Length: 192
Image 1 (tube, one colour):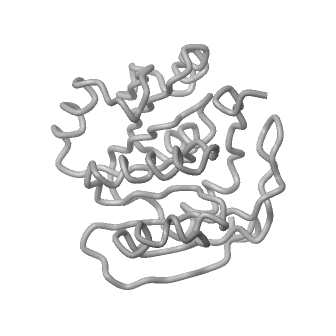
Image 2 (spheres, helix red, strand yellow; image 1 turned 90 degrees about the vertical axis):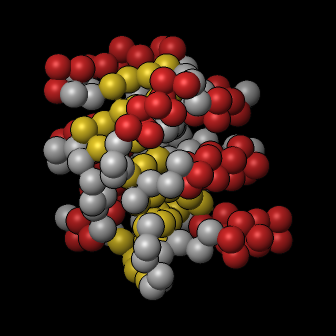
């Protein structure tokens, strides 16, 4: 199976668990790898205005149903790693914004590029759903040194991603502009 075509939407509970303890502080949120809307739907449900980018055109209609333009949401079919100028202008026009994403997991280098690209936009808050093994790599040691997260939330239960998954330990890594302290906490469905 071609890893670039694998699509495992994020179940709602990991995102709701994160938001119960550490929600995005801004109204505007960018979801740069939206898929069919697993994270974007939770963002919209709790009242955020979402701009979702997704590389696969077949995800456009499901995303538009979840994120109606009439409510201020935007759906942009584009590769986040090759942000079109209109997305860059849009993000630059926001005084404050957050990013919440489940970046592509394979290969790990693509995941790292997604996380770096998100952090390069300088959001107020950036949450990335990552495999715990992403922490333990000699190749990524420099990344963790250069970009230490302000919070790590370890999911105490492995999510069952729609279409597959469930065989990895997962964590949310959160970066917040201007925050220096670090915290680590376990999250479970029970905190909802």
